[in-house]
Image (cartoon, rainbow, N blue to C red; front, side):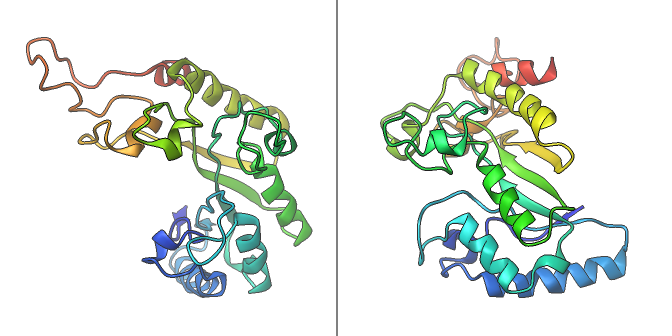
Length: 234
């Protein structure tokens, strides 16, 4: 399988340029044709759309971007739809309607939950792509409650909740999303050099390899596992 680009509905992935679904489809088509010529059996996954409510120029909501992709003729040029599905504060079973409740505790937007995938799936069906699968290229929950990162602190969960939610997400998908769900990739195994200053550090299911190495070399045994790693392994 091949992935083409990543999160094209966010301007930061396009060098600060406003998201451009038509331009992305042109890129996707070129790559798809080249890949199929090289290996007709290869599966092409479209770039993972990131859930967001932000409007251009810095981003485009993922349902809007996907609808624009279809309008630009994307359907023949991907075999699986790539999506990102962070859970934010919500357990994996929470529906988009529950997440959108302004009186609730999940953020007040439908995309603030793992099951936002179902809304994107509905768009696929609407555009005649119900026969294709979805590939979740990133999903997870993060555990940083630090006031130094307020944009992330509001939806932090505990390491124990992170473990439970990841396992339950796989279980929910198995029980409710077959046959249209394809591969699901947990975000993440960390870069060895990440520290707590890196936002990505807090999504990891193990410690970065060098984390803690400078505290006591005599006691250090390398990267420690987190509850999520143990839960997924079991």
